[in-house]
Image (cartoon, rainbow, N blue to C red; front, top):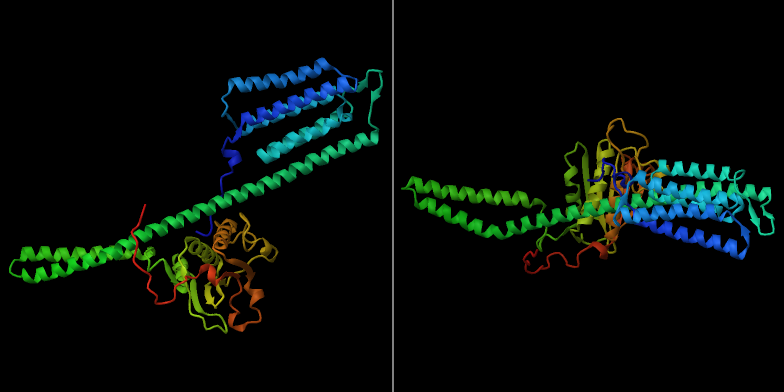
Length: 463
């Protein structure tokens, strides 16, 4: 299917996929860093700090880590709410440490950005927004409310007001920018991963159908001779049993059931293409096979197969690869979905290239989206909801699957609008909708055999 109306499930909301052990290990690193910073500040720089309160704040993190390590199993995975609480605890603990060590006068205040970045990468937009607001509120409150940094001689270490404001502003910008940046990057990676998974599932499904059809085709091919023998023998037997009607009826029944077996295998084997004679087929046959499921959907699909202009090359036989058939089928379905009345499917070939073009008489692609066609989960072609198809969700995933599968076969795809491509061609004036061109090097898709060459003996199927 070229279009998928069911949106992929958001794994952030449905799965518990953040391990508690991962957050615990990160917290141990933070604890080590905080203790090291306190020791250096006190021993090397002789700063007077509220050491007792600082170690109390660190102790809260140590206790929470020990509880998490001993109470919960190592493979414990956290829900969205649980992960949010863990990250919020770390943010508040860091805020307390900053309050005790100079507020924004402490250069480590930039670390308040960390929990927001983690949330943007692992949690929902709502949780990330909440933590972002909390971090900005914390750094704002740390400006007037904090214990000052003081040396052993009694001097206070303060940053000039302009730098203090600059530090606050930089942290706010970092929270917003890194949160949004991380969110966009992770969302695009997740969307691409889901789309690639859908592509693999589509290819696996097409491969299974091809394999199943191949088994049926091979069975029909191999059983054809014995069924013909049974039919011939039963016919001769029926002629010899004219004097015994009961036995004659049995012989005729055998012939009738042999014909029925032949017809069943023939109908089941229409999609089966996997013996040596059917693993390869003329380009035109493969293109029409790809479009076959959409022929009876109320739109006219017009085929044209011919050598490229100025070429006298013979039509190539191409490998019946599942990715090629499924990719072309997706493109044809997309054209049928949006066409008004007609869809044109053309194939051309030369000594060097094989080209398939799919066009329709619909509204075409929005011009501002032409450069993004083939990205996963891109929305509607025509912009806005089509009143003729109110249930139609969009075309992005289907076109992504088609583009990915066809490019795996060595093809290059280009998308355009017929109204722009054919406005000076009177013979193609009706082709005003979407125009998709799929182009392969002939060596990438065509069989090495020439028409009429023997293919050899069929090999048995192996599991």
